[in-house]
Image (tube, rainbow, N blue to C red; front, side, top):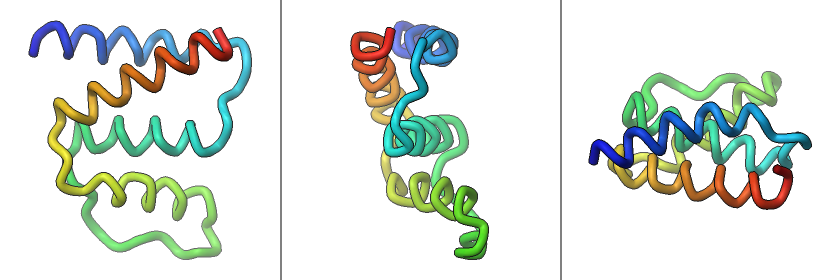
Length: 88
């Protein structure tokens, strides 16, 4: 588990080094996986549809409800690794 935590933290730094901005779907996935990993299931009600960015982020997080932190961290690391290969 400690190795996964270290890789998760490292991936958070590596994602900032991408030379190209990832597609919105990847950004939303990263956001949702990160939030689920560190905060657990989403709480509160969804932001207004008129606040499109906030609403999309909420939905990306909510879609991961029930996943445990370790699985979210593993998926986050895998996604960052694939983005680094693609946009490194």
